[in-house]
Length: 427
View (tube, rainbow, N blue to C red):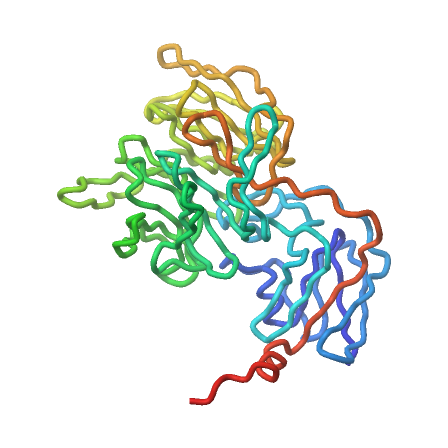
């Protein structure tokens, strides 16, 4: 059988085999911009290169004709990112490729050997100010959205390799466990200020829209729904008093606003979520709200300048201050010093000194915190330890060996072959 397809410039392939085309755009609930047109034809963006191949066994190799060099990172809409609520930059030369294949429920898989993937199978490293990296967690995993607990002894992260769900990693014990009843549709976890609970986004309500939930971090309780909305939401940051949650809400195809969820009650009487209110709504996209350690300020990301930059506003009051100069993402406050950190699309960590004069916020000139870069992806791949001296990061991808990589490998009917070589035991 002859297979035809199109390879997107830079190496991203979207097959039109229905299940695989759907998998290529998952895990986001929003539909892909391009729809399959036939069962044996691929869809792609302009500038694609043709590929053909012959299937003779369950493994088929395709030779790519006239594959152009990878383009620079490009802007993708919200549904194209793992974080379904943020417009961001993705490097087409690394999305969906690597030793980890794309796969579909019909048993079709594809991969390009030797190419690094989008956060697939990476360990976690310590990174200090001098640029030195040391192992934090050696075991590689497909993880995103890393976040330190308030005491700095644990990490919470979104894991999607092998066992999927909200993982809690105990640093001293080198032990990764998962919150009960969490799975691949639970995303972007955040600790509450007291470290008792983990807040995250989940589609468990209607199976398509991300709303907010939380549950005890010790695994003893069930998930509790915090919001009910037709718009997708993801948690950003808790006020240090534990009474307000800043989050972002997707109100349009590329329109994300910042919201505040008030919480009523306490540990003794129980917690009850209040009615969310708008913190910031403009014609621009605002994301990644982060409360300052004293709760007075919220740092966030906006594209109002024509690129994503970090800004600061008072939680209560008026005013706005731009922090980054040449772009910035994922603002992160130091709990130990008057400093605000942020990442860049090319994996640099920047820092600014901060000060407050009455009702005014002051940010110093951004400076490079470390010469060593982290592995920047479409989601948060770094977080600052509470001591303010070191980061947990995804290691930057190592340079790929020179040479032409023009071979795509398809595996067809994998599950049929698996059932043949390892038949299920009869009962």
